Image (tube, rainbow, N blue to C red; front, side, top):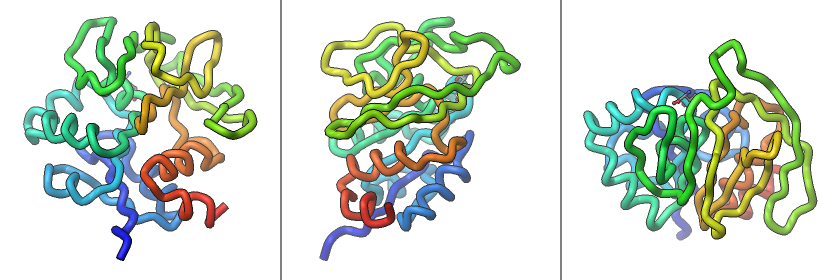
Length: 202
Ligand code: GLN
């Protein structure tokens, strides 16, 4: 029998419940992940927004850094905002450790402070599909300032990539769980091998 479609959401900190609700709406079991055993049972993992420095401390406290890197070799990760910072190869402003899962360089808090957070719309181009209008909620978001040619830019805003794909991994500097469209969640499910699920609830 096929393995059930279980997607993890790293639940050390940050915006877990909205991703869980979004996946539940798409009929996918979404489980909070705080340990390596829970991680191993997932087909993919979302690292939600939050505060990347706090995530780094908690990853160490929960001994989850190495299991995450090992998991990413086999299965998809999607980093949202702080999650994309954790997955980067290099972090600026200030420099900090990251898991080097994506060959990108990000600059933290690149749009300014909390009250300079904003909502914008831009075209999102998923592989094999036409452009779709995507709403992006940016909350003290990073900017991707450099990326290797193997990284596909799925969307950009103001000349800067805001959604990227590298193999089976995704990164968005905005928060799709706060927008109406389910496009990014469906795309992640497709990368996790749930094409049928992602399409059937369309
Ligand atoms: N500013 C946060 C950081 O640097 C990210 C904010 C977010 O995830 N919404 O980690």
